Image (tube, rainbow, N blue to C red; front, side, top):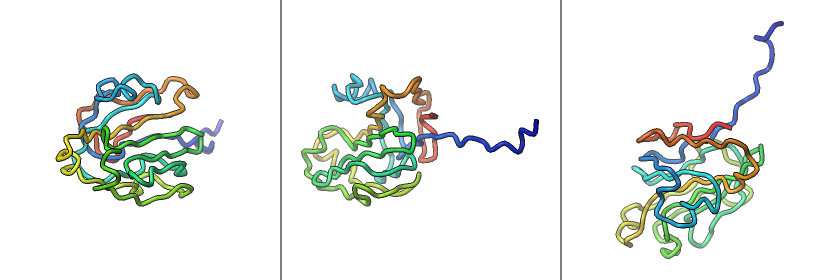
Length: 160
């Protein structure tokens, strides 16, 4: 009757964690990611060196030695992996800095990782940022937005 007084259910979303050029996960130059072995996702070729949180949640994993990847668990139990570059584990953390640790609570937009794109390229590595829902089999109809050439940090890439 008075629908204006009903509490609206807050829609959960995942935004881009970096500005850049978006590509479907199938076009990422890594067999594990492009075959969706780790889950549904996208790749973003970054135009900047700062990764921010694409969602509210809790940090559930951080690659502390290599500093190139971390995982966030949202309140709906969705697990989002952010992975900086292809084979950047070989850099052993050089050029990377983490701003969070396992157990930290984060909000959309919080700084998570900085990385040196030029150093990645000097090491002849791909600087693509990969965002994957690692438990995507637990969610129906995940539809990442890949119809955009460019994304900014506030671009919604997945509505849940």
